[in-house]
Structure formats: structure tokens, C-alpha cells
Image (cartoon, rainbow, N blue to C red; front, side):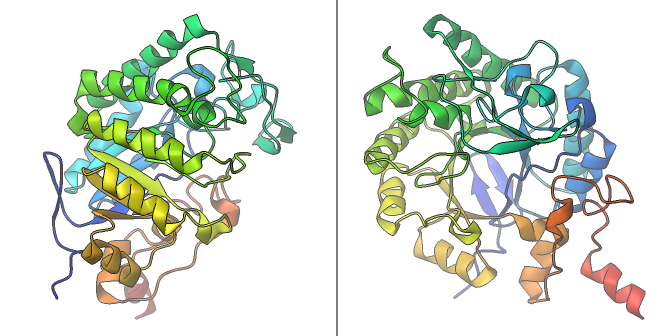
Amino acid sequence: MASLLFSPAQLGPLTLQNHIVMAPMTRSRAPGNVPNALMAEYYAQRASAGLIITEGASPSPNGQGYARTPGLYTQQQVAGWQLTTDAVHARGGRIFVQLMHSGRIAHALNLPEGAEAVSASAVTAAGEMWTDQQQMQPHPQPRALRTDELPQVVAEFVKSARLAIEAGFDGVELHGANGYLLEQFLHPISNQRTDQYGGSVENRARFVLEVAAAVAQVIGAERTGIRLSPWGVFSDMPHYPEIDATYAYLTAELQRLNLVYLHLVDHASMGAPAVPPATVAAIRERFTNTLILSGGYDAQQAEEALQSGRADLVAFGRPFISNPDLVERLRTGAPLAPYDPATFYAPGPAGFQQGYTDYPALAETEAASR
């Protein structure tokens, strides 16, 4: 049986080099929230992936949340991201930007001046987050967005999507996973609203669908994807009885919008409960465009998911951090270099490049050992 993993793939109008996706991973290498040349080097090193999905970029100052994460709402940020898109395209790669509004997962010290933590409701998330000024700090109580403010938040996503195309991205991924703003509307614990955006499954899904519809209308559904994490517990998202009903409804409506892909993440490899196979099957049945599965895959598991039809593309995350040539290593069965979690989100003593752009490709390692 011929391998699918390393053969070309189609994603809407785009032809990808292979069926391997580099998953979005926050790396916190953007001081001042502006993308830079070092980030361009990092993504270019990994351009052999069929599709790169960038780390989350905020569509607005309120969405910034974390320390040193990039945004995509100013012309300076557009110019910074253009360095990355040019570098990836020069190496034959394709790249989508992930638009991530962190909502209540934030801290004032990480937000630009005048920005604030907002959410579906004024429900504080358990846990803490890193600030460069005062290290770990508890999440603040967010301000609940008023009903009349929601069109403006939708407009921020739309503007950011327009800027993404201006910056040269092939498309955008809306981050509806991991407990950030879009999922905060989906989840009945973080969403305690009594207006048309709260209560029923249909109401809780309304904001996500409005954002997806507005972005798809402006840049094209063929350039718009979304990431979801049903059964995920990241960012204080406990399980609730209507999980499967929520995602069954949501994915059917996303198919109606004809989004180019749905990116389904399973955090079991990181210690979270696994997404039940029946949940994945129900989503696969309702969403018939490209389905990307993500969550601790190796080459053999990825190939099996593709051959079985459970997935159309498979995303790899942390292995891409320490293996810029991951595609070639998977293809040849070469050993994978280990990653250093201590430098995932912070520079080492040698600076921002340590644990970021200084992982060598296998060919470089072999040449150095001769």
C-alpha cells in the first residue's frame, strides 16, 4: 500500500507537499507583540511540512493574554509577519496564521496599555500564568462582554483576517480550542450568559459561528479553518454533560459554512482525557471537508489515520520544535532529537534563539560528527 503521509495533499485550492501539518505552538519570541526575523527563520527551517499553522496571534490588544506573543492587528505586525510568509513561501511551504483571542486566560502585565481581560462571563479561570515582571500570577476576573460589544469583537477577527492575507498568509485558523475566548463562549461553565449567546447549545455556539461566518465571507471559506478541542480540559475547562451534543451541532454548522478544514486536537498525550473515538467519528460524519487530527502521533499512527479515512491531514507539534527536518526524519525512520521543555516559552541563557532556531537538522549533525 502506497504511503499517504509523504505524498502531496490538497487543501481547498492549495496543493501541499505532504499530509504533515506543523501544529500551532506558542513560543513567546515576539517582544512587544511584534513578529520578527528570528521567527521567520524558525518557520522557514520547518517549511518542509505540508502546512504550517503558526503560533496563536491575537486579533486585538484585549486578546494578547500571554507574555511575548505576536499580534496581528497593526501594520507593524503585518510587516513582521511578512518576513515569515516570504521565508516559508521561498522554500515551497504553505502557512496559515492561527488567530487566538485568549479572553480570560490573561494577565494585565501581559496586555498592551488600555487592554483588559474579557470573556463570555465574569468567571475567573483557575490557575496562574507567567508574567515577565512578577513571574507567576493568578488569572484575573474577566469583564463579561456586553451583547452590544460582540459585533465589535467579530469585526476585530475580520480585520485581523484581512491583515493576514495582506501579510501573505495562505489562510487563517480560528482558535476555538484550549479554553480561549471562542471556547469560553462554547462552554457552559465559562458562559453563564442569559442573552442569545448563553444557555442552549445553539446559543453557546452562536458567537463562534458568527466569527467563522464573518471571516469566511471576507477572505473566503477556502482560506478559513478552525481548531477545536472537545473533551479538552486545558485552561480550566471541566467536562460537562452536553459536550458531544455541543460539538455535533457546531461541526454540522461549520460544514454549512464550508470552512476548508477542521483541526481536532486530542491532549491525551499530554495527560488530558482522550477524545472518545465516537466523538471523533461523529465529527467526521458531520464535517466532510478536510479534517486534521492532532495529538501525539508518530509516523505509523499518522499513516493509519490517513489510510482509514479518519483524518485527511495529521498534525505534529512538539517533535517539530527540536526537529526542523521532521518530515525527512519521519520519512527515513531517522531518530528524533529530544526537545527541551525549559526553552519552550522562554529563552535560554544564550538568548531567544536557544531552544528555538538552534536545533540542527540531521544532515548538520552528521556532518559535524565526521
